[in-house]
Image (cartoon, rainbow, N blue to C red):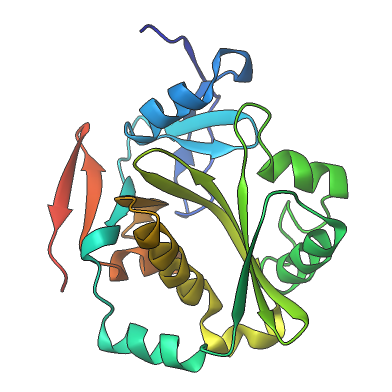
Length: 231
C-alpha cells in the first residue's frame, strides 16, 4: 500500500522553546479506519480527520508511547490516585454534546489560558475531536450528577488511542488526567485489548512526562517499538 503524505511548513514548536517543528500529514480523503490502524503503529496521531506525525529536521524528541495494557501494574503513587477517585462513576458515550463543550471551555480557560484553543466555537470543538471516517468513543466521569471529566478515545482491533482528555479545573487536585488513563487501561483490559496509545512522550518537556509513569510501555524509536523498563 502506497500513501501520499504532505509536509507542513516549519512553525514554532508547541512543547520546546526555541525549536521549530513540522509534521507529515495524510489528507482526509486518503484515510480509512484500516489505514488509521496501520499508521498508529508507525507513530501517527489523529487531529480531527487528519493523521500526522512529527517530521522535524533537527529534533527527534517526540516519541510515540503505548502502554502494555494486559501487563500494567499501578505504582504506589497510582494506587493512591485510584483510591482518591473511587467515588467517580464512569459512562461510555458515542456522541459529543454541548455539555462536553462547556466543560472543555472551562478546562481550556483554566489550563491553557491565552492559547489558540481557548476560544474555539462548538463547531471547531467537534471538528477537532470527531472523525468522519471512524467512530469515536467517549468516557465520561461523574461525581454524583456532575460531569467532571471527558476523554475521547479511538478504538482499534489491538487497542485504543487516547485522543484528548479534559476535566473540571476545580477537581485538579484529584489527578484526573492520570485517573482517566488508569480507567482507560482497565476498560481495554476488560475488552481483551493490548495497547493504549498515549501520544508523544517528550523527555525535555516536563508537562508531557506523565505518560512515562505508566509501565510497562513501549516507545516508537527509529521506526520500531522498544520496551522501556519502569524506573
